Image (cartoon, rainbow over all chains, first blue to last red; front, side):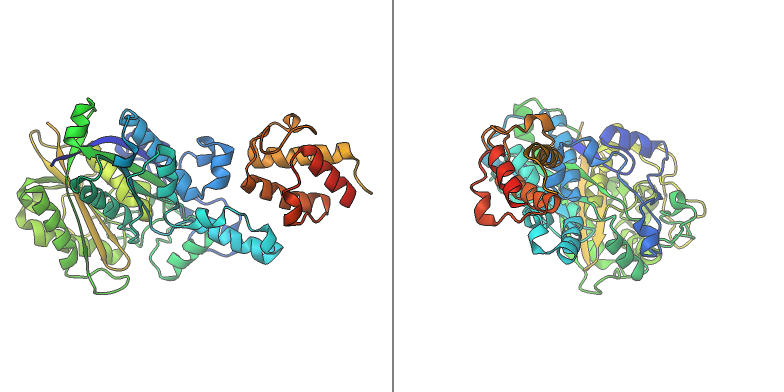
Length: 410
Length: 81
């Protein structure tokens, strides 16, 4: 059974939809800016910038949707609706439509706002929608309700690997024969003082407060941590048979999706990269492909000192000398790190790279780390003609590794 | 000083507008919250707790089910402030 991508959606720090995001990415723009919220100074947050959604959800959704959905679910709904419309809003059997949609953290705004309300105003003032708004399956459930998906609505949670895992899980659902079509992806809305303070406390995030647009700099010698972003991404995935029967536009094949775990350290990547390498190899194996078939990688590359090297080590194990022939893009340089939404928007970028035969640039690479001799794309680069493969990697706290592989559609 | 029923109605209409986006002038005494204004139980609870703050009244949960129309709510608030 072959699986194809027929719809894409995104709302990101670069743009409110796929086209504006992709155009800004190719133009080398940064979506990172200084946070103007009063809580930054009020709580002395040591990190004063992030990648905020370019288009606020309140400009897209109704007042009622904004009141009843956590910001993470708002991004999810925006991305999923775009992807669904892009797929032609197909007329499907609801029982054969599923959702695999992730978040890394869940409804953190709702949870913490509700706790503030409880402390300041008492239990009676806690909103009746608090529970469905804070639950991590809230985004998937919101999409499921919106699209009337009755074939199963699930949420994989594996920190920053979550939405890549969601896409991998979609393959399993489609191959089971139980469903014909899956809306997959992920979202995050964690630009809240607590998560920012918590990531800063573990020194995971960049503190380049004076140059926010240069703070996310994967592979650069002066990288000092990731930059939090927010938004969501969605893909409509279906069997090729189903897509062709309805005359759908096809972007690419989804040919592999794999999940492994390190069991090494709760936050640090395995420096040998063996778990990540196994995930790449398993995704290629599912694709029936060889490492030499891969022309492009959208790397996890969060701009942390150890993470970028560990991923390079893993890639070197898999690809050997062929690694120097692969165009590597680290798009978090522009978008920031959307945590549970990262894999989804990067899968969108990977699919577009194959369809448009263009690898997107990695900005802020002023002085490449000599320990990471990858062929990093720094301005939009043409990818080879003919059938080619591209992969997208995501890794998460907890030792999660997830990889998806796409093949160009001829 | 106690508010008049007209003032309560105006204040309640503001709360309905904030919660649902419905135009304030659609909130009239003879309208039913659920049938005419399409306000479900979740929005109703939010409007009720906000009304408690705004008008300084207590509206017990068991009373909320009796507030069928806008007039029911205006009368309850005006009589209990």
